[in-house]
Length: 518
Image 1 (cartoon, rainbow, N blue to C red):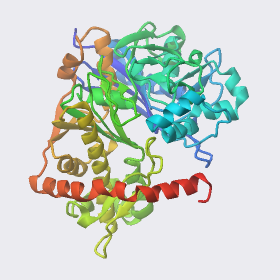
Image 2 (tube, one colour):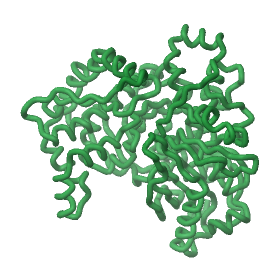
Image 3 (cartoon, rainbow, N blue to C red):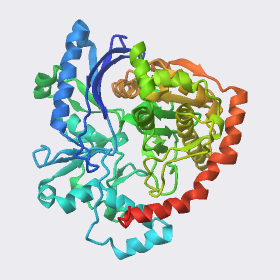
Image 4 (cartoon, one colour):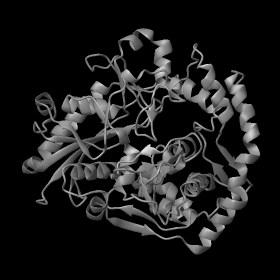
């Protein structure tokens, strides 16, 4: 290793496309970003995107990176793509999109006219999976296209994650990392390959295996930059393209969570907590553990679908005054809100939030809840209660995963936009009751993908050496014993008791919605 090697990472997110360049010490040498919502909605809960347009954005940020790096552009030794999950691209026989891609924020549903096999339905009922399977089938994007767009379905030869399409544009090979598979289609997470047609849940997705793409192990070379891609992107022809993983998987790798002692908490639009295990452990019954970027590992995960989206929601709905103050001071509104939040005591004077503004797959009945109001509460109490509620939900998920995996997490690594706030990090330390830390960059997805690149090229022997050289703890927040005790009591005596107490009410609302009465 010369020490001058660089990795070029394309991080294609919900709101921006980034070209990130990292060196072998984990330093972000360059970040070029093209801002803009990548999804569009017609008001009917549909979220779609033109992946060819996103490819052009990738080429644009790549060309800008080439210009900014100058002579160091020749030090690029590998390229990788990390992208959003639960999003699907439909391709024809020539690997051209047969329709717009459907992105993860899409909430469309479909009633499939064909029944699932009787034997499978009986087994779903015995296992208590019936409603989970029904929700999975209704919300599966492939089923929606199959039922509503039969002409598109007929000419669709392959259905892939966005990362596979972008990798194809770079290499000419339609393949994807196993660590990039996190969507409603027939991937066998335990065996890390496509499901057998005899698999219990295979019929749920309505997708033949021949429509799936080739899969490769993470941290391996998937192909090389083609002449055409070189011309469009400015990347030298022949540069290796490496399989990394989906954004959350790369985040977990990028913060150094490669064993059971560290959990990765991501404060993004969707908030999540992941652990890394040697064996396959479902985080909750019927939910998979994803393939990790760290070789030969799994990532059980609990996700809050509308995580730090709730901060944006609160800002837009309740924080006009704080937005005006922020504009006058030349800062973002969240900074002003954080300052007010720190004036509120831990526990928000008994105001509690269950942050289920978007339900999970195994709890489709779940609803958001804010309870404990009294005449002393202000909108700043509400804001703090939202931040606390997200952490309470993640803590509950983490403790369930610890029990199922037989591990004890000692430290929490924070990433995502919400982690840029020191106030948020301090609350996290108090609620989780253990040290939380941030690493040297907020671009942890890109960092994890670059680590995969250097492992694939043999610059590091494996995950441990990559973490040792590229992941550096920058900020550590330790819990305040007094605050932690308050939160623990509130969590045990109040928070975890809320959902079981109101679940029957949620089911009543859920059934009324399902029957179109609301």
